[in-house]
Length: 266
Image (cartoon, rainbow, N blue to C red; front, side, top):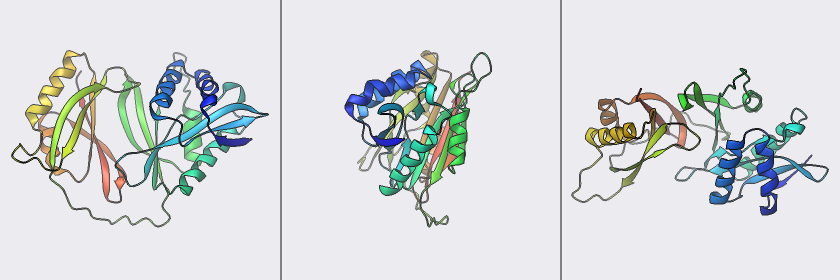
């Protein structure tokens, strides 16, 4: 069981492996590799043949946080230890490049027969010390939730870090349908450090405009996330009907978490 870095010429084999599980995932993985490259991606070999893949993506604007990316073993080689081997290899690589916290997004999808194809992956993650932090109900589709697991890789973790609140200008920019979902939307926003004489933050009215636009596109739900040290967004979110789901601890850096909110349109 040899693990090595993914090469460009491996891409077709890797996509074929993902396709043995889910053709939609294979399509999404191909787009991801084409858009974001193959840095921090690995494959596992059996007799010089690629039988699985895994890797991670660093998260921009964080203190070395990352997400696990496409982790799949060819169906023919499942339950033979390949998944455990390459996943442990990726965890070791994460430690080498000093990633502080690693996250995994996964679905609890059930097929028509009641089978849960992602349960084996969840058991693998839990075996390696990952813990469930957030469940976003009906995220991917009706009765298909998004589960986010995490593991902190720091040896000495200070849980009492206090971060000062900030009040920058927050600009609401656009709405978009969330990839791999059916009818779930989010809002694009950015922080402007020097707004001059513009209003300080987006308002309840801004959010209501966005909600109306999602309704017009027949959206089901709106999911949005913000850093925990931006208090000006809390009241507008509450006034426009968003509900707090939970937070990913120390997502941006120690003491700054990622807060998750949802607005139901049904």
